[in-house]
Length: 494
Image (cartoon, rainbow, N blue to C red; front, side, top):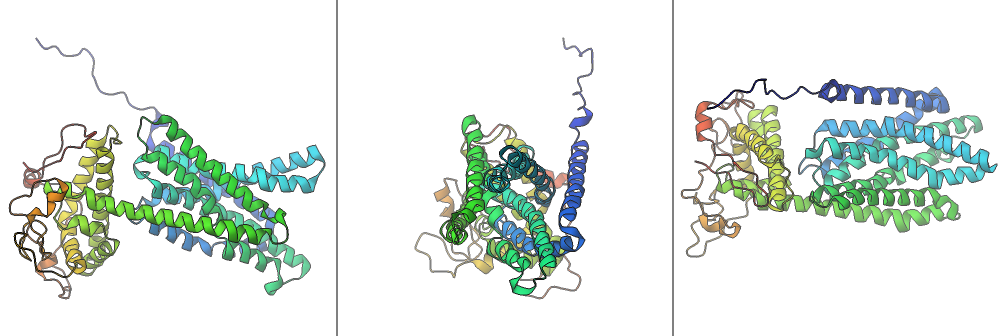
């Protein structure tokens, strides 16, 4: 005989300090106070005029660096709030820690050794790299721990670390350029012979990537750790530490280049910094291409289950095709449609990465829940995104060729269809059986064919992220019912 529990079984409510709004409020307050303090310190050291001049010159490379890191993150773009936090942490919290710690350590060494010049050199080559790289690495660690879904690989580590270092360099450049302007005010120098022009050329023109380059090594360590399985706890702990130590070493070499003679700076810049920058740039771009290949290889599983259209894996694996899809949606259905297509592309990419982690045994216990969330997001936006993706697939398709006997006819709607000349057997290489009948092409927006001008008021009016109706719920493919590792189950239509 069943009995009822004597007490309610509702889960206990979290403590007040565990609530999201409390954590967000505390973090925002910390960054705001740090920003006000660092503003006062920099203004005190540079003066009001020096601060304004330094601010105007230091802001110039920031949009270019942010745009470069955002471009690297276009395959699976992370939320803007992470980038805002990283930049604010670097510009406010990390800069404040560095100014206070470096000043205190340099004064203590000068007092203990009675050698101010030696204390300045030791502070620049030893103290500053350790303090500054540790302060910047704290932002990467926080995103790694508390935004784990947004931190899945090397590119995420590079972007997080690079944006943090960009914020730090922004504040540091204000200080250096403001002090240089104050020196010129005392000496009367101006033009290209001034200290301000020389400082601007070295810090903003020649080496705007210096701080991002150092901290990116820490980000790569965290990114490789994110790719490691849960069983390798020692590796996950040592890889970020190794990246941090490399960042400190490169930073120390850069700061100490002035001690290598008259041409020491140029020697370190040309023989070490530029090659390292090129190597890391190649590594990040190669990693981005691997991510696109992952999208192309993992998404056909969801095509065969009925979640995606046949041409979508190859379309979503091309950045050019993605851009064409967003432009088509914007032209025919407005900005909201373009935003929905961009979201569809991002969710599909996250789904491919999630599937890869599950196939390799690196999926967490929330794999099935996360997969359902991503599939729900795709399902709600399918009516908006599929016409645009279909247009992009047609626009980027290779010219049709005559098929070999037995491989289908061009323009058939089985398998890929869509005028590509592939038959249903094209999926045999993926190990999945072909679905009978395939998919029919998706109708364009408002019933207008491709290439026709958009109407003034498009007949297609999407419902933005609607709650699925009962009819949609019945026609929706089934969700998996078990944990996927090590081989994720394939959700299929009933």
